[in-house]
Image (cartoon, rainbow, N blue to C red; front, side, top):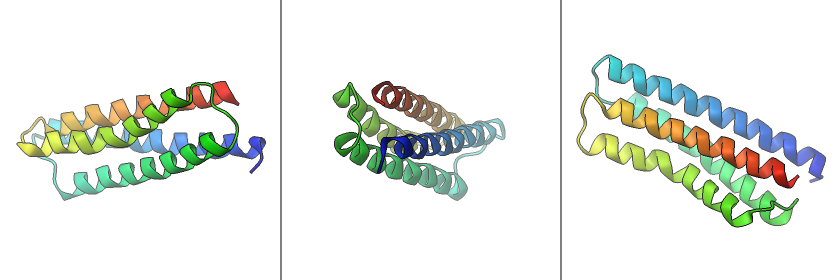
Length: 128
């Protein structure tokens, strides 16, 4: 895959993941405002965003290791791992002892994930 075609693929994945994480954050805040604990819908939403993150991580790792170089490869790979791990850890914290604030925990994890993904994009574009 040529360098010119790689950047749009990564940029599209970034936008999809950031929008999905933002929607999940809003969903978490609405759940908190309604004084409800996360249910099946929240679990499916978290799972969907994590699936998107796993696809993005796989594509980005392969492209970073085989395609155009990323100047800070170790930092890039660490952000990839963090972006995939934050939401499952947030879900564990939110559901370990469910309360009204569980949605806020998931919202915070979703925002943290979105920030990590935007930072990944910054690292990626610095190398291309």
